[in-house]
Image (tube, rainbow, N blue to C red; front, top):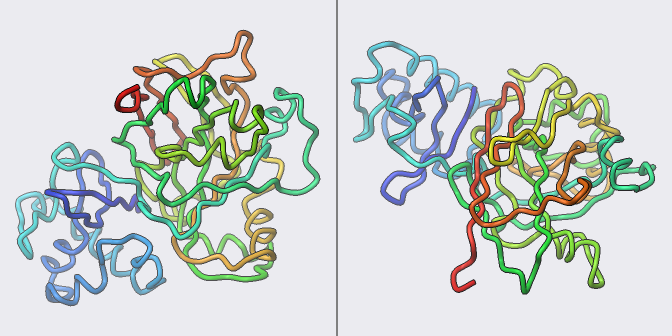
Length: 315
């Protein structure tokens, strides 16, 4: 399933992408006769993290709802005051997990990216964080905070892991069973704040709008191997990054096991797993993001995350 969070008239709801349409999970569940509106609201809250916390019960209910939504006549049906299936363009897509509990990021996790930045290959995962309030969706703008704060704004396409159940000291060989699914991320980075001016990684990476994610949470059953996914990023139509997750230094199971030895992971936590080569700061001359730029971060099977860079108000 390609699960989404979408908003209509200021309200968030859970759905699933089917081609160019969205199936509303609550409405489809009720229309299929699987339960009444009140029960469907319990199964499919407006918050993706709460939904993921229900585990297999919620996922099974979602699969049943999506299966009903695939019917050719579902597009004309209404249940609980909501269409069962409707065009994606008629609503706004939010980040699949709009407010994750934690946003954990792994640095220098592609060998060739470490080499292009002149950094040694790490011996264990490098960890930094963003904040839940940094997260934006596939139809939101990245705000350039202005030259007074940063003149070296950069992009980084990343595979993002979404946790599906709670775990501490997770065995590496069982780690993928804790994953709900995957999405596309863009680790926006102010390189001068990160690496210069008494730089700190979090200071350069945790500004408002610096964690775009989307368009969908693709459930783990549709991604047999997260280490065989072509990924890349286009800037204003020009390919800047083009690689494959098989180049990861530390695998997804290794990262999950490593992190869970340090702290408990919960449903809805997200892990940015690192970026391949081609980032702006490593180019000669460097390429820095500016207002008006459009970034398209993509991963095969997961979709394309498109965000425009805009100037902050008053800048």
